[in-house]
Image 1 (cartoon, one colour):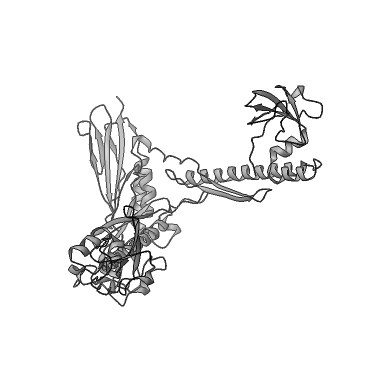
Image 2: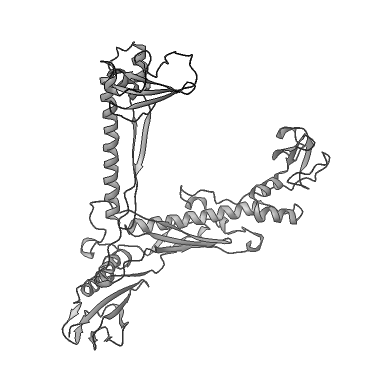
Length: 502
């Protein structure tokens, strides 16, 4: 379909005519349904019945100007374009385009409605997950000509709410979900999920490459481990032992063509590149690149395991990004996951009264294993390393800093003991209700003897504080820091500001 902008009936269509016989009237884009008249005319100056639209035609050789006057039905068919214009021409101008116009109007209305719905859905997701953005796709929709349109809408992310009383907002840094190391991939293939990108079987050793002999004296990229023959040949045309790959070499100086034939080890090392290819060359071709293949496979398994741990933790704490760090076989990194809070759903925060099980399990275990194949050598230096026969990854302790309200919500999601989590949440809620403006020198603080926490004054020149009370000695803002540590090692930091009236 030729997309043309919808214009008013007075739209001006310009056509450049490259060459015309002297005094010949050019044909317009709408021939034979239009009339072409000399000069530049307005649509009102076109003949009756041809005032649907007008277009300017310029003969660049004679600099003469013409006006193409369109009947309304021909102009509408031409504006819609595509099959509508073709059917109009085939019918000799009798085709009624009203049905096509309604079809296109319905099609465009459908797209606009879908875009609006996608925008509203994306915005709802963003509002339910402040600081996050989720895009929503729409379509595909089929237009009257058979083409398809689709796309996506991304409403702007909604900023996280500002903590009350000047307390800092929850940090954007993801919460740790645990870590994995080399011993955590010492399981059999039965313990690897279907999402794991590679097998945990060690890569088989590659046969030693044969010594090159014969061929051309021309040197290729794999010299001195490859054989170069004159002409262009396929892999089957390469010498025996050098049929792992072939490459074409064109010498522009002599206009000759050569084929470089590769042995398996050399080609594998060259394809892996970097240190592997350097090591292969420095050892004269004795280095086995299957060692690097095995190492990369184990790194991929490490990433896969870490991703699974992060995803499992994220599902248990919707609205909080969880990350799992991994380290081993010469590399390290982390994998993160985030579970969106469904728009309009209840808060992910639950109270112990509504759940008999912990909100977060402190241990994520993989199925028991019967083999330690992956614990064997990824490089010659660690062939004797011992490994565990099971995978057990403990969630790392996390640090959460924010307002008292935020800590009250997140403690229920992170602290594994439900009773302890409820106590932390209650203490944080009580701290959030602490009066910001106090009329007395001393104000009693909420307490919970069952918890491990401390209260510190960050402005000792203004106020003193303990877990029992806060004493504001002079005018100014008193800044309090409340640090709560649960039995699993997770720590929560609340910053609170108070002042005393004179």
